[in-house]
Figure 1: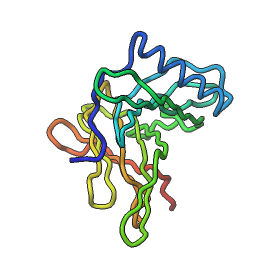
Figure 2: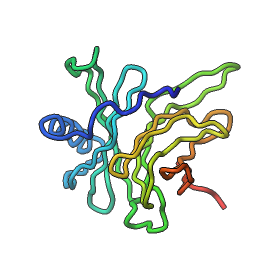
Figure 3: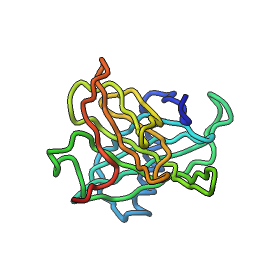
Length: 191
C-alpha cells in the first residue's frame, strides 16, 4: 500500500550491529567532525527503491548525531552490497525541549518527479515517541497518509514524499485503538 516496505529485520545487534556501527561512526567523523559519540540508538529498517535504510542517533558533545546506514541485497539472506551512510549534527535534542511529543530526525534520500513538472523530495524520517502508549506512527502529506510504521521500543521509521505541491510532511502518532496522541511537522512553524 505504501512505497516503502515495512521493517523486515529486528533492530541491529551482535556482529551485524557492530558492522553498521563502524560504518555509521566513520561517517559521523567525516561529516560532522564529532569524535566523542555516545551509544548508538538504532531505528527500524525500511526499504525503498532497492535500498534498505537503518537510521541511528547517538549523543555527542552539545547535541546529537543523526543519520543512517544504507545497503542493497539481491534477495533475502544475500550478502549486503553498496553500503553507504550519511550523518549530521544537531543541537536540538529532546532533553533540551521537554515540550516535544515526538523527537524527529530526517534526511532527504531522493527526488521524485510527477506530472506537469511537479517535483518532490523522498525523505527518510525516524523518531522516538515521547508520549506513552504509542502504537503506530504515520507520515501525512496534505490529506494523504503516505507511510506508517509500528513502533519498536517507542521508535519508528518512515519514508515519504515531501515538499510536493506546497505540502510538507507531518508525523502523527496513534495509540493502539487509533486515537491520535501527537503530531509534529518536520519544519519549524513560523508565527
